[in-house]
Image 1 (cartoon, rainbow, N blue to C red):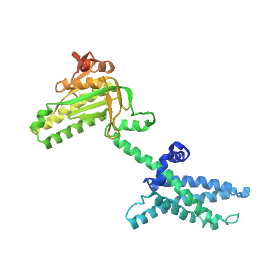
Image 2 (spheres, one colour):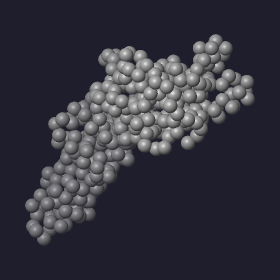
Image 3 (cartoon, helix red, strand yellow):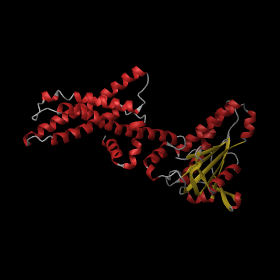
Image 4 (tube, rainbow, N blue to C red):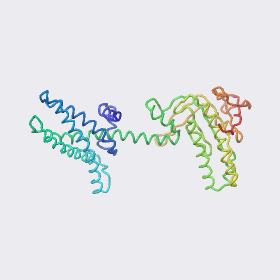
Length: 384
């Protein structure tokens, strides 16, 4: 419970985080009761303790006043969020909408704090003060009216962070597996998406005879077929923590090692390819029995240094990879026969497990990058 409270307090203390607290006066984040209560109760206890120590009573009465002021704080900390909840409901009933204007939201905070402060006044008679009441009768309502917007702003800040984290995780979830998304969120301070060199493994898969399939099938059937195919393939890619870099028509480009390196990129790419072919075999059995054409794919895999980052313009950005491994994997995937996986000698060198491969031939790569030995992944259609 203390971690979000500490983050909220740091947001007030650290100048570099103050811009995030703009929600206090012009934002729309609204912390729910479950977020507000930990903040209000914790801050109220601390302030009650400080007040009990600062009132200047005789030493034998200090313990009494500490308990008294902490009780006042607990009362205010508990009821202020409740009054806020009631105020929001009344505002919504009268206006038919949430109080999106931040001045109105802060006014509700202050009114709720003042009402909660008024509830502490009966304790002055239940636990009589030793010092004259005087200004103490207005101290509690005014202080809680002033403090509650600040405490609520800290809770709003933490709630906004939670919302942004959820949105970011949902966004990453469209490209990477849940485990990679979680790793990105945990290590976000050390990650850069602006442009960097990385050692990555690239997998390229392409449907064979897709142009003919489009001509034979109607547009609705083509879309349905692709959706079924992509759903199955992406589930497998995410299973092995690959990053879906892009779709090129019916082709899929997958990265292993960006934006997060896990250390066994080549092995995970090979395992992905084998399972893709295995799943496709089961899918085709059902398609053929339904009188539909089978889907056949070729896959190419290469590994090496690439440049990854956000590329494009301010209006349209894409996280992508550029380099020889991308071109090589694309070329190998394009020439690979149906149900075949071509892997480069670079990939073979990085495979630590006993992966069955068969030398195919030396291939002259495009772009004048020289010849490489290409291997065929044996039993590429089998499950692992």
